[in-house]
Length: 132
Image 1 (cartoon, one colour):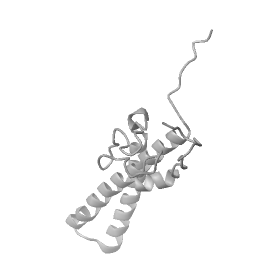
Image 2 (cartoon, one colour; image 1 turned 60 degrees about the horizontal axis):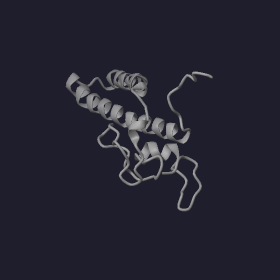
Image 3 (tube, helix red, strand yellow; image 1 turned 30 degrees about the vertical axis):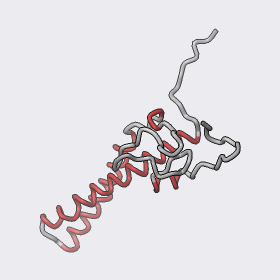
Image 4 (tube, one colour; image 1 turned 120 degrees about the vertical axis):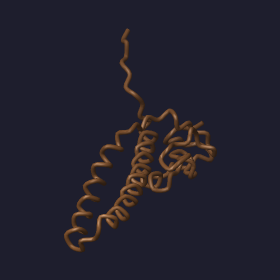
């Protein structure tokens, strides 16, 4: 197995972070094998064997993205209410699916980008050196 930045026969450059995030690509080989569900990572890439469980993306993006998306949806809903005055059921018909789709889409992109950055930078958990 080769790591990030390897230069050997048959080694190709890994895909860009934005490409991994938007297309759900493996950060090593570039095959679309990153996700096993809508926002759940696969255990490993079936093309190159990269173990995705070694990366710790965590749930950090969830709260941050939900707050941003909530602000955008709330502003759009208030604007729609003040300009068109639709009934409540129409608000629910519009904003519930928009919010759900926005959260899933943004989490996929954020989690994939963080995993790609972690792979590219060979980031690992901090360890304390016990010293001599």
